[in-house]
Amino acid sequence: MGRTVDFIRRHRKVIVVSHIRPDGDAVGSVTGLTNFLRNVGIEAYPVLKHGVPTVFSFVPGADGVLTELPKGDLYVLVDASDWERTGFDRPDAPIIRFDHHLTGERYSEHDLLDEEAPSATSLILRFLREWDEGAIDLSVALPLYTGLLTDTGSFKNREGTRAFEDAIYLVERGVNPRKVAELIFREKPVKMYQLLSLALKTLSVVEDGKVAYMVVRREFFEKTGASREHSEGFVEYPLSIRGVIVAMKVEWDPEGYWKVGLRSKDGGPNVAAIAEKFGGGGHYFSAGCRIFGEEEEVIEALLSEIRKHLYSNVT
Image (tube, rainbow, N blue to C red; front, top):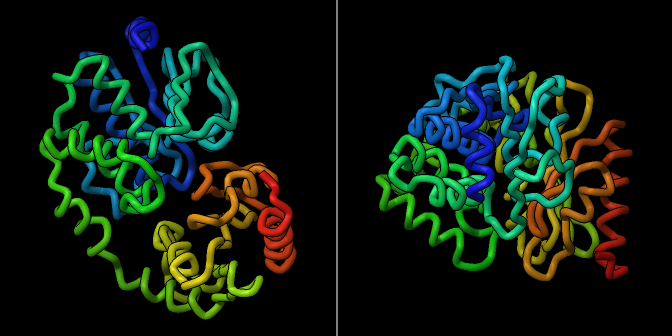
């Protein structure tokens, strides 16, 4: 990792960017890494095309996240499989990628990819600890913890001790885990529950109770005035049904596609492999993709692929 540190230091202006419709891991990765780079004297700028969801507005540096891509000498792509997912045109400058998904494009010998990392922020934390632990203050630790907490589903989605070891380290750096949990999970707007009530009416359980899904339609957003950020985490509801081992959320997006979230439990199939069939990706227990088409066609295509993995030992 030392060579990657030297490589970053050779560039005057560093732009840190992640994917559209950012989740907690994207927000935490962008702001945490940017804050660290500034702490060590590097000019750095955080960028998210769709901005920071309100639920993560407490993260240090969230109010300074740009929604337009500035010119820079180096671009660090975090928590994204390829540049296309940022929503911006590819820059005419070097790109390096920090991610915990092995699928996707490789950009340089300085890419840091670790499928064993429970979140992109976990991978970034390990990198920053080797760079300069003294520069990891609360402005860095809090965003990184936010990504870790949310991307592991509150430590439900990943096995092993690494997530807990990282959490302990970040708490020792000043993070208040109770406060973070309250801000993320106990400060929900009414619109979120109104949207959820409509989406739950679409809940379906199929394949002898092994698969469940819910749909978030365009008219649900229009009726409630909710936005895409309010549906974050909805996939946990079909997943929580007893006997279900695979769940999905199929959500309308104003850009014309359906945003699909896939989850599985122990004993369930590799949902990353399912998502990859539709151009997406992720992890064994958590993945996603985007699909164009009519609602019924999209759902049937997904169920057909899920059946292959349920009954045919597809890996």
